[in-house]
Length: 167
Image (tube, rainbow, N blue to C red; front, side, top):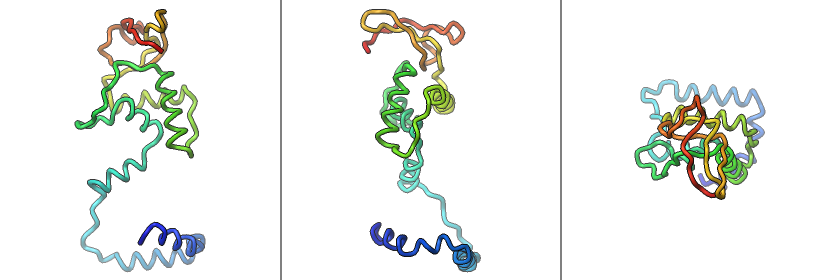
C-alpha cells in the first residue's frame, strides 16, 4: 500500500476509530485471529529500528547529538572541550524552530537542566561550570557552560583556564 492509498483509506475510514463498538469488535477479531500464534514477531532491529529511533528524538537530544555526537563508536563529531550555555541554547532554539515546529521552545534554565541530564547519562566526562573564563575580542569574559571535567579548575571554584576564541 502506498502512502497515498493509506492516506485515502484513513480519510474514508477514520470515522470507525471514534466508534467504541467498532473498535472493540476489531480488537476482538484481532485477538481471536492471532491468539494462537506460537511465534512472536521480533522487535525492530537494523535499519527499521534506526529509522524509528530517529523519528522519536526530541529537540534537546537532536541538539546534543549535533554538538556532542551520539556516543557511538563510528560517530564522526569532534566534541568541544567546552561550550557556553548561551551558545548551546541558541543552537537548540535554531534546531527546534527548523526541525521541530510542533515543539515549544523551553526556557533557558529548563533547557540547561535537561542538557546537563543528557550529558550525565551519555557523556559523563562533561560537567556544568557556573563560570568558564574566555577571551572575547581581546577582553576577558566569563559565562556558565559545560566543559570536559579534565579542564583545569574545579566545579567548586568554578574556574578554568583562559581560552581564546572570538564571538
